[in-house]
Amino acid sequence: MPLPFLQQVAQAAPSASPSISPEAAANASSGFEVPPLAPPALFHIGSLGFTNTILYTYLVIVTLAILAIVCTRNMKIVAAGRSWQMFAEVVVNAILNLAENSLGRQRARVIFPLMATLFIFILAANWFSLLPIIGPIYATIDGQHVPIFRAVNADWSTTLALALVTFAITEFYGLRYRAKEHLLHFVKPIGVGQIELVSEFVRILSLSVRLFGNLFAGEVLVTVMTSLIPLAVPAVFLVLETLFGFIQAVVFTVLCLAYFTLNTTSHHVEAEDHVHNPLGATPD
Amino acid sequence: MDVHAAARLAAGIAIGFGAIGPGIGIGFVGRGAMESIGRNPEAAGTIQTNMILGMALAEAVAIYALIIAFVMAFTG
Image (cartoon, rainbow over all chains, first blue to last red; front, top):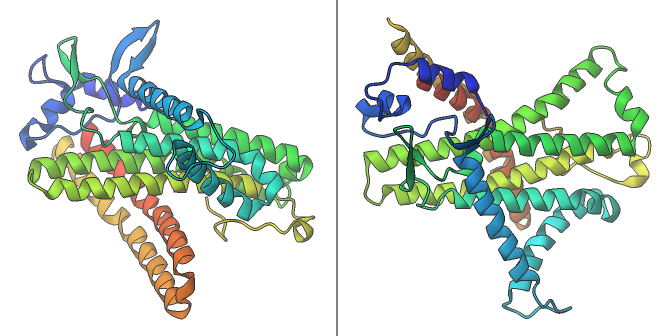
């Protein structure tokens, strides 16, 4: 559960009537309801809340699984021009080329599965969060209106999980490819090494908050614009959100690749390995 | 000034100042990309992709400020 203090504050705040959530009461004067930062739980399994984000995440996963089955059903060596297989090949090839261009064939195949998974899941989740089924379908739980679906990446828990997985895997391969050097560069130049160590962990925060912030801010932006000028104007912002959803998926994927490249490139063999950072600079 | 008013004001100040740096940064990225495309129009495709990446990275800083602003506006 992200930001537990928010919930405590929200519960502590006096609400106008028991049927309206504290956030709704706080925003009632401005005429629109901004989605809360912490997702409400639909039901509890033990002490674990099953939130509306998790439900929507499963919807995205099931959709992607069905799409994958459709795309890989009776595959041919040469795909037909307008087939599902062709569609899948185009997407997968684009990501593979991105990895191979900066890592070379062998190492690209190592990080490719994670990259492709991240890209496809984040893109699907971002575009799913533009569907109009998110707002209007709600359940009444304890007298409060709780939407059944919630944009997947507008919940910090999801993006934090994605960032943690990326961090863990890139660190694992860092240790595997250049074990001693990887550990040593956190220690060696006293001062610089420690900053390196901190910047390594800041990656988790920057990766997760970048995606979460973009999606959450986009959701709020569309909500505000819809309530201010309901005619035609929100469409412009929805187009922008479609674009941002794609860009953020690309950014997350490329940063995953960049971290992998930085962590697995040994400085002693760089000349013969001929590897470069896809961004050309050190991102943090 | 009560706490709620102060929190709203702080939220406005946070995003206002937080947007200055990324704004300048995105401007630099855009200028660099435009100059490069002007010098080498054939590379426009690659430059545009990298420009959007750089802009998204700069924009993320503004997003951090926005999150702080949201937290203050919602909880205050």
